Amino acid sequence: MVVGSVAAIGAGLAAIGAGVGIGMIGKGAVESIARQPEAVNDIRSNMIVMAAFIEAVALFAVVVALLGNG
Amino acid sequence: MVFSFVSIFLLNTITLFANEKAAAANEEGSFNVTQTILEHIKDDHSWHLWGHTSIALPVIFYTPAGLEVFSSAKLIDEHHEPVVYKGKFDYKLVEGKAKIVNAAGEVDEAASKKLWDFSITKNVASLFISVIILLLVVLTAAGAYKKTGISSAPKGVQSILEPIVIFVRDEIALPNIGAKRFAKHMPFLLTIFFIILTNNFLGLIPIFPGGANVSGNIAFTMTLAVCVFIVVNLSSNKNYWQHIFWMPGMHWSMKLFLAPIEFIGVFTKPISLMIRLFANITAGHILVLSLVCLVFIFKTVYAAAVAVPFVIFIFMIELLVAFLQAYIFTMLTAMYIGMASEEAHHDQAHH
Image (cartoon, rainbow over all chains, first blue to last red):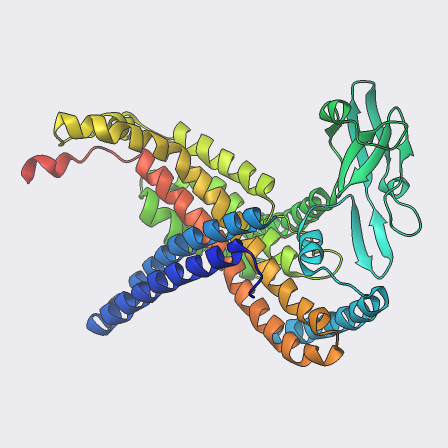
């Protein structure tokens, strides 16, 4: 029998969502850099900001999972 | 060079720490990972140095009977267990928080609610240290600029500060606020950027001057978010509020629908800033601590062979995150200020 916390499932689901999101940003950024290499600086800073938004949502989920665990 | 120094330094401290703690865990038999991690990331009345040595910080209470100041060493006995301290009331630490207890040693909830804790805790002391560091660095640079002006090349501490200040100006303030108004907001943005950066870096140092989880404390990030909220709303103009309550260029039913959503957005923007910084830094600390705890879970020092390289790897990422979070916080603040003070689009008529 598997014993554990539902919070762990929540944290795992959050990781899946964030992984897909950040993966799509990475895909978009690499494609656009390949098309327009001279815009690499603008693309990079926008990529980081977008990744931070997604990461924040994932971390909200982690915080909720932690609170649910405690 | 700096990185290799830091990693060697971390390797030593972590291994020492791991050996000592693993021995302690074997003696005591059981080891609660979650409890240990939460103890390390929360605020405390004393500052743990090593082994059984800690700095006792002052405890300051405002009670209905008046002000009370004493050392936090009086709240613990020689075995580091909480004991009752008899002042104007009887105080005891319950899970790290000071409470008023009655004669039988039970927590008096009604009296504890009237207890205002203004103690210099670990986080407050760490904040003082970071402010002293910042003042030293910034005032030294400012003095150098006063003496030589901007005609000569930067020297000493100027060489570190100047690229960062120019980065904040050219990459954060200028593109988001605009050339007309960015200069007015530069002091605020730089303050936010440097205070977050310093506290993030101090939080990553595992020994004394660092080690407190300041920027991973929700009260600290809330204070920053409230400052951002005030500054954004003070710099707002008519155009901004019109876009919130009566979005131009929409059907009236859509305007009614959007108004409450946009109004909630005024508050959720700073709240998301608050939670983002708190969660990122806390998650980083938990990650490092859980990897160190692998040693105690497997109850062998040899687990450090796996744990320590991973911890160093995570520390390297955390160095990036420490900078990135300061950048993101300042960047979004600049974006919100820019949105709030944007002039109406005069070119709309041409479309």
